Amino acid sequence: MKINLTDNTRMAKYILGGTCSLLMIFSCVPSKPLAESKVQLPESFTELESDTVNSAQLEWRDYFSDPQLISLIDSALAKNQELNIMMRQINIANNEISERKGEYLPFVGVRAGAEVEKVGEFTRSGAVEKNLDIREGEEFPEPLTDYSVGLFATWELDIWKKLRNAKKAAVFEYLATVEGKNFMVTQLISEIAESYFELLALDNQLDLIDQNLEIQDNALRMVRLQKQAARTTELAVRRFEAEVLKNRSHRFEVKQRIIEVENEINLLVGRIPEPIQRNSSDLLQRQIDTSYAGVPSQLLQNRPDIKKAEYELAAAELSIKEARANFFPSLELNAGVGLQAFDTQFLNSTPESLIYSVVGDVVGPLINRRAIKAHYNNASERQVQAVFEYEKAVLQGYVEVVNQLSKQDNLKKSYDLKSKQVDALNETIDYSTRLFRSARAEYIEVLLAQREALDSKMELVETKKEQLIARVNLYKALGGGWN
Image 1 (cartoon, helix red, strand yellow):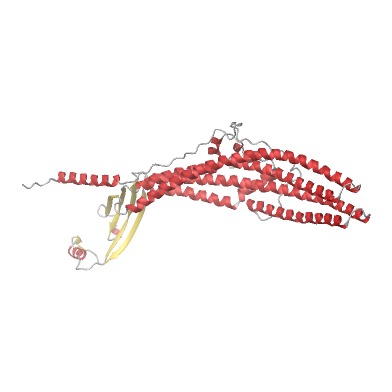
Image 2 (image 1 turned 90 degrees about the vertical axis):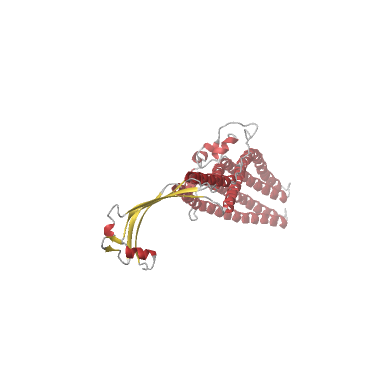
């Protein structure tokens, strides 16, 4: 017996078959677990400190007290070329958000057109026009013109949230770019402060060389007089002359370095080279204000590079969802409404000239799934990479703070000891000179006393500079400067 299937049975069979096919396709969609950060910060930077007071929460104007330095930083924040380039990058990232948002909203446009067509008589279209009148007694014109005007709309329904996830990812990328700018501000402020304090130290070293040259010139005159009195030899005179010449040469090296550091600052400020206004006379008397590190967990909020890595991680996770949605079918609606006629005078004749259409398309990947799968795998790998970048930023921030805290403490102890060393060596210059005049000491002792005293003073200035720079670096390591 032959059984005929009814239309409803056939429809049910087709729906069931299509459902099974979709289930088979969806069952092949890959799914990988998201990688998670495993880094954990301790409760404090040192065993003796657990105070939540954090210097990074101070505005940079309150952290630095030198008015010339503040003026330089102000100019750099307004004119630095790299910072202004980054500001344009932020605008680009912001425009990306608008672009992604527009992708999941309906697109509506207007269209108008005109054409002329002459078809062959021995064709289907030609035969129809030949044997069919527009209205009784009126044939189609030849050639046939066509005029149309109307609105059209396309809309991809974001049923798998692919487009919305892409937009959210763009938001996180924008936020990451903002944090990148904040990190650049922190770096810029610290670079200017470091160069500024180096400039003050070079000025002091130049003064020390000049003071020492004056002492050595006096000693050289004394040795020459001693030689004339036959109380010393030409060797002593030559040794003192060589020492004077060495320090005069070193003086020009320091002056060159001053010019280079000034121009480094000018470049950061975004201007052509000019002298840097500064007050270097009180460098050794400057007090090093106490900086407070707070607790390690505050780094997650204060350091822009950590926040940037966090936003990039969030964007990478959304990119995985966006890439996975490519495996599923997309639903797109197309609609249009307008007027169409072979003569413009009939465009207003409705409903005869009225045209409209509504079309829905469901498109799913079937053959070229390898490219989609590769895109998904790459998104997954980038998410794992973002986790490592985040962990790296957190660990680097913690290590930098610990290093600078230790450096501040050790530099303070070193400075105190070198201050005593300078006092002791300053006394040896006077003692050795008096002993040499009374022939109770050799010229080499005077020479060594002067050399050691100069070296110790230079080291003291260098240590003071390192103290000031360590305070700057701690501020930077804590994430200060951008707020």
